Amino acid sequence: MGRELERLKNRRKASDRLSAILKQREHVLVVHYSCESFYDRADGRTPRVTSIAVRNLASGQTQSFSIHKVAEQRHIPLADIKGRYDELEKAMLDEFFDFVRTHQNFVWMHWNMRDINYGFQGKR
Image (cartoon, rainbow, N blue to C red):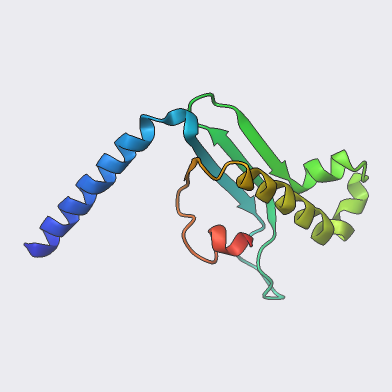
């Protein structure tokens, strides 16, 4: 019975927190990213982040960061992207973290981004 009560308390706490967050929607950003497949990694390398999207919960305005967007801005031909993935991924992540620095007072919402494989720790 003790575990059930603890779960109920945690659920109530989470529900209260979510209600408080949703009252200030203009200061809530929802973040999601995509990366290369986690499977079939013959070299054991961490999957590369290919894009990140950040959406303001109130306005619906979305800021996107992607390897292909950086390549396009730099006028890099599609055929040359593969050979420059490291450079382009770093530039994309630099842009994303510049955005993060200017939005530190926002609440960042995500789902399942909580560990080294699929979370903020892996993006550093």
